[in-house]
Structures are given as C-alpha cells and as structure tokens.
Image 1 (cartoon, rainbow over the protein chains, first blue to last red):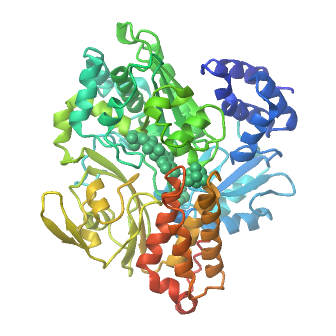
Image 2 (tube, protein in one colour):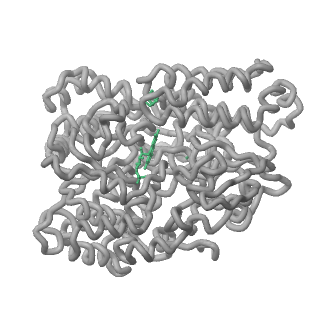
Image 3 (cartoon, each protein chain N blue to C red):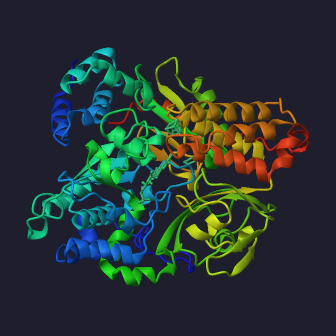
Amino acid sequence: MNLKPETLQKIDEVITHYPVKRSAALPLLHLVQEDQGHVSPAAIEWIAGKLELQPINVYELVTFYPMFRQQPAGRRHIKVCRTLSCALAGSHQVCAELERQFDCHTGETSADGAVTIEFVECLASCGSGPVVMIDEELHEQVDVAKARTLAAQLKQPAAGRQP
Amino acid sequence: MPHPAERRLIFRHIDEPGYTADLPCYLRHGGYEALKKAVARKPEELVDEVKKSGLRGRGGAGFPCGVKWTLVDRRSGKPIYLIVNADESEPGTFKDRHIIHQDPHQLIEGIMIACWANQVKQAYIYIRGEFPKGARILEQAIAEARAQRLVGPGILGTGYSCEIYVHRGAGAYICGEETGLIESLEGKRPYPRIKPPYFPAVLGLYQCPTIVNNVETLCHVRHIAEMGGEAFARIGTPNNTGTRLLCVSGQVQRPGYYEVESGRITMGQLLHDLCGGPRPGRTFKAVIPGGSSSKILRFGERFKIKRKDGTTADWGVEDIPMDFDSLAACGSMGGSGGVIVLDDSADMVAALANLNAFYAHESCGQCTPCREGSLWMKKITARMVHGDARPGDGELLKNVADQIAGRTVCPFGEACAWPTQSFVLKFGEEFKNYAETKKARPADGLELI
Ligand SMILES: Cc1cc2nc3c(=O)[nH]c(=O)nc-3n(C[C@H](O)[C@H](O)[C@H](O)COP(=O)(O)O)c2cc1C
Ligand code: SF4
Ligand code: FES
C-alpha cells in the first residue's frame, strides 16, 4: 500500500471522530479509493488491519455499497440519473447518446480508459433533470444536444480527471 | 424569485443574489442569534417549545419532533447522539441538497440548538455519498463555526461542548432508513434493525439513545427557537404546522422547489399557479405526492373525506390541501415532499417499471418478501414494457405486492409495495389491456425502462 502522506494524515484524523474504530470503515474506503482509484484486495486487508477488523468486515462493505469499486474506473466518471423524474425528461436518450459518443456500455469503461459510464439511481436533483454527474460536477437539464457538447469537452486532450 | 403564494422561512435566502454559504454572510443576516437565545435557556424549555410548535418530521414519516425528543432515554447514563439524516435519496426529493449547498450554517445552527435541547455532545451528519461537494461545504462551515466557538468546546462562552462530524454514505438508498443508517454509521452493511427492541431513542448508535432527524426538520428547529413554538404553530394549519418544502418534478411547466405554509395551498394551486400547469397541449393524468414511495393519485378520482371533527369533504386531486393529514386521508402521504407529476402522455406501466427497477436495486436483501418481491415486480413490469404483456399481469403484480407490505423488518417493504398496489388499483385498465394500449400509443421515443 502506497498511500499519499495527505491520505494517511486524513485517515488518522478521521479515526478520531468515532468512539468505535469500525465506524471509520466507510470514510477509510472513500479515502483509499480517492487515493488509488479503486479498492484492491491489498487495500481491504490494510483497512481491516488499521481498524482491527477481519478483512471480510471490509470486503462486505465494498460488495454492498455501489460507490466502491474493485476495478479502476476511467479517467472521468460519468453518472446519468435513471430514475423516474429524469427518465420522464429523457435521461434514457441522454444515456444512449453518451454510450454512442464513447462507444461504451453503461457499467463499463471505454476501451481507451477515458470514461466510465454508469446509469445510477436518483441524484436528488429531480426538478432539473435529466441530470448527469461528471466526477463531482452536476450538470442539469442535459438533453441530447447538451450531452453531445459535454462529450466533446471530455474528448479534448486536456480533459483529464479534475483534481 | 419566489412565487407570491409561497412563504419562505427556510428558503428565505436561497437563490438570493449575493447570499453566500460562508459564516460572515450568515452572521450579517442574523445568523446564530437563535442559538445565543437558546443556550441562555434551560434545555427542557426548548424541548417544550418544539412540542408546542407541533413540528412534524420532514424525512418522510411526519412523526412529531417534540415527542421524538421526549422519548429519548435520559436515565441510561449513556451519551445521547444526534444524527442528521442528509441521505436525501427518496426519488423526487431535492430540498436538503439546496439547504446544504446554499445555507449550510442554517442547518448547523439548527443542529446545535437540537443538541443543546437534548444535551447531546456528539452529532453526526450522515450525507449521501453522491454529495461530495455538499460534504465539503458542510465541513468548511463547521470549521468556520468552530473557529467562532459556535461548535466544539465551550460554545458561546458556556461550559457546554458539542462536536459535529460529517460522515459520507456510499450510494445505498436504504441508508436513509434510520436504523439502516445507524448500522452504516457503525461501519457495517446498512441492514435495518428490527423494532422492538431497536428504537433509536433507546438503543441507537452504539446501543446508546439516539435522535435521528432530517435536515429540513432541524432547520425548522432553528426557526422555532427564534420565534417560539406558539408562533410557529400559527403558520400552516392545525396538526400540520409550519412551512413545507415541496419539490416538484416530472411533466409540468415549472418544476422546482417551493416553500409554502402546510395545508394552505391545494395540489391544484401548487401545480397550476406555482408550477404553471401542464405542458402545452397536455393535461395532468396522475401525481405521486410525497416521494416515489407514496401512493399515486389519479386526476378525476374523488375522495370522500371524514374529518376528525365530524365534518366531511368531497375532493378531486386538485382540491387536496398539501399537508400530511389531508394526503393521508386520501390514501397517500405527504412523505418527503417530492411531488412527481405525470401527464396524459405517460405510459403508466413503463413509469411503474422504472420505479420497480429502483426498488429492486435498493432492497437490502435481508427479508425474503422484499428481496424477492421487489425483483419480481421489476421483472414483470419490464417484461410487459418489452413486448410480452399478459392480461393477468395486473393481478399478478398486486398479488406480489400484497405479500410484501407488512411482512418485513423495515418500512421499505411498504415503500416498494405501495407504488405497485396504487398504480394497478388506479390504472387497472391500462395494465389489463397493455398490449393493445401500447400499440395504440403514439411513439414519442420516450423510454422509461
Ligand atoms: C426506505 C426509507 C428511506 C428513507 N430515506 C430517508 C432519507 O433519505 N432522508 C430522511 O431524512 N429520511 C429518510 N427516511 C426516514 C427516516 O427513517 C427517519 O424517519 C427520518 O430521518 C426521521 O427524521 P424526521 O423525524 O426529522 O423526519 C427513510 C425511511 C425509509 C423507510
Ligand atoms: S424490508 Fe427490504 S430493505 Fe427493509 S430490511 Fe427488509 S429486505 Fe431490507
Ligand atoms: S430522478 Fe433524477 S435526480 Fe431524482
């Protein structure tokens, strides 16, 4: 495990937030995933050791909570909202357009590793749907035309993962 | 600009040009004065104010907040925890996001007042994982408040100390259910706990007495501390006091958030006056009034209501006052305040299939009826939409749903059964003749599943 010093510092700080170490499992998984891009078997062992748990106690979280991934994602992570209000505003068409643009199915990463596309459940922005989250940025009222513009921006050479 | 029919209390400064999320701005607008007033009073007096206010929880169940606070076990000798439910995951709901992003100090002030009233020394804000920016905004706001002795050790020169930490979820809807949330905060899978014995007020976080309140509820607490419980109770209608944040989405001209006095406007006023009515050339067909789990209402149906005082009413959907009791009297609920509108172009089977896919994805899997039933309801409705609808499907769906509700550990069982039960009950014809109606429907290219 080669975690950045800042990550290690944050990990030690966050553990102090709880009277019981195990509570820090989700925060540690987030920090490790942000640092490494995904949660590897080694990371699971490391977190378990840090919190005095068995690896299975951490592994069962990774397999339950949708936001944790065991494989690296693309450089940019696109999440399109699938749920009713966004669907009524056309999110299925938006998702299909993004799949076409990147030649990549939902739930997968494009062959060049540029993007991962996911079709996710309600992102709590139903009044301005369809909504699309790209990394941490929320885009509202994304119709097919706007999806194409977003895709074009993502395809520019400088569009690496934002810090 | 707020609509003239709105009454903005919590959203007073939302979208106001120049209003920012930082502490100096909040202080310029009278921020933390309510907390100063509160810590000068006895904690019991504040619990009393909240009781007098009649405030009901805004997370979904509408449970009286003052009563919840009185149920807390204060004799156990164990610490009391406060958990702020910022999971905001009920489809159709998007109010807490705006509070967190635009006015985080209002929430923090509400939390600190609630903590003082209940002598809580440690609060956690459980925020859904998909709000990474919201989490950072809250952390920043807590740090600012801490630097001014509004949070942390010895607040406002008193001997009272209280910490707030932000805890991020990771994409699971069931973490919004209070006991699932507690398990998640303990670092486990969010499998809801069975009640009894695990009432949070007695055996909550780390088996200690715990209060779980929604973001909006705690913001109301701030206003109650400022104006007093009696003044708050004069807003809205009896038993449905205060204002309510309503989130409107779906097939309507002006979707968005609106803050209104509870029960002082009807569904018709909300959808026509505030939201601008149906889209051009369309008429309203149905509305889901309180988040995706609440039972759907069909335009054209009549509700014959008998009130507690013996008076009666005969309402159409447009006439229903927007409050907990009236929506419950019509067989649905106010829930989380998420109003989802469907117009005459909507394919009801496809809409239900969309919701069923949500519930099948989000069931935690602990109880067989919920895990299997939610999956079957998804499969049946998806099969119907994808070209293999059978005349008996409506009854089959109802049958599955009826075997979930009431037979599970947590209310998710009802939450996933109610859409199917109500869609099939109210749009039975559409389910029965789906194969034909689908063929007759003009192709609009809109896919829902
Ligand atoms: C399946 C399910 C999901 C829920 N999701 C949320 C949620 O996202 N946010 C919330 O505040 N309450 C949610 N609740 C309600 C909570 O369990 C709890 O009643 C509420 O947070 C209490 O706060 P209040 O009394 O202030 O409303 C959910 C309940 C269920 C059964
Ligand atoms: S009802 Fe569903 S979500 Fe609730 S505990 Fe049972 S399986 Fe889990
Ligand atoms: S349905 Fe898409 S954000 Fe809620």
